[in-house]
Length: 141
Image (cartoon, rainbow, N blue to C red):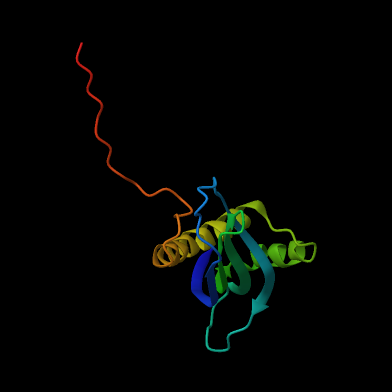
């Protein structure tokens, strides 16, 4: 499995209100696959099959504080046998487990980076913790 194309088609972010009441925020993320289809390229001469995947990645801040929504397309090159299996299972909106993990990890990696950038611009709490240094607690006995 190889990623041969990835792009965002829509980026939507909105800060609905400030958390001025100091409410405990619940931040949730979700990934949704809306379409998987075979894509034909006359220019590419390859034995592998290419699948086009439409996806959405969403970050929601509850209670109704903000949202970040990313829509995109992904092109993946697969062995013919696996491509056929993916397309057959997709008829029931399912995917082979290995393919699903691969796909979700690619989307998660690229979309998380974009969402973090947008969250920083909107001055929103980041949906995932960033690494930080902490002072070591040295207690003397």
